[in-house]
Image (cartoon, rainbow, N blue to C red; front, side):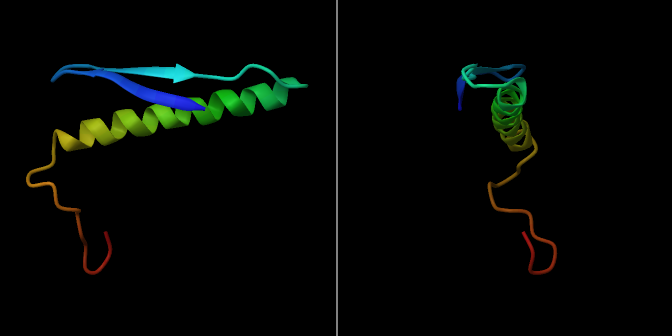
Length: 65
């Protein structure tokens, strides 16, 4: 799977997702789709969180990040 951030602006993020569609059965294809979409969601969430980040350091509660 390959999810790539193509463009970022203050209002939008564009992500390109490549999903392999070969496989023997539908469940294999559904799993590939789910993995690819999850990768795209991760990229989008990481980008959105940077808009709320103040200094780039990890958020810590006690000793846990």
